[in-house]
Image (cartoon, rainbow over all chains, first blue to last red; front, side, top):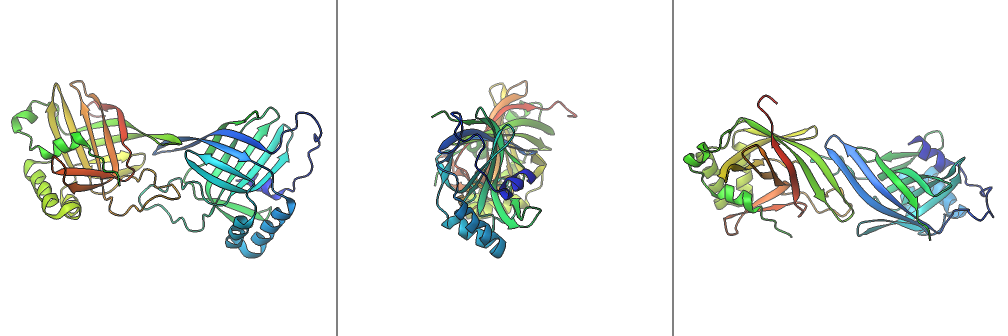
Length: 188
Length: 193
């Protein structure tokens, strides 16, 4: 999940397009189709991602510090203490986003989100599936263009660990990658 | 706890098929079928390709032994007896293959109604949910389907189930998910396929 880690590790500056009429930022809502394919079959679901606001730098700093100093467990605790900044809704279930960042790109934005609980254990229904312990979060990355269309991916159950080039490594529980397709920013 | 009765499967399970009836339903085992399994939930759905290989059908004597085990000892005794029964086929989803220990066929109209059971679960539909219920006790899988004289049909499957004595026919099947997996476009493979 290199790209996701890069996004995670980059500090978000003020978008250069700030002040222009078509600037897109929170509060905002995205709809997406979530797909996972494996040899056993294929599953699809529709999700709604609502970002009320992007995380304040001080909250990000606290979570990053917890990760660096206390590892995955400390990060999970810090994440749960951070303010809720949005929700992911799938069917009749809602999950709280407590980490939300956006980074401008050449064609639009890259948005990274962390949920304070796992959303789903992909592959967890197979007899003898691996332990779920420590997979306490879910991580989403959206790559959006300037018109509000994009794609993304999700670690539906993830362990955030210190390490890697950026200092943050994400281990996904998922047996297969979870893709977000037809991502669309809703017009409010 | 929703209890889903696979009515057709129960009929097959409850009936000791007359030899004359089975002889009408050519072709019999060994034979194989492929099916597309579909399940729908609140947020979406899933689909998978399923392959069922039946080397032979369970004899009346073995079937009676299983029925007696269920009647006298409930699900636990039934599962134990099923595990002791000979392997007579396989049910494959993706690269996961599970042995079939019970298979029955019954003539119906111009075609057949077929039911199979494995002695272990194939998968727990919905168990990936964060608040999924425990999987313990759902030790078998049951599939049943009909095929017409050309070998085409449809059916349903409980990929992780408990078998209980009870209900109008004496047998009830409770599947883990509480949702029916539809077997659509069931087709009998041509010999050698």
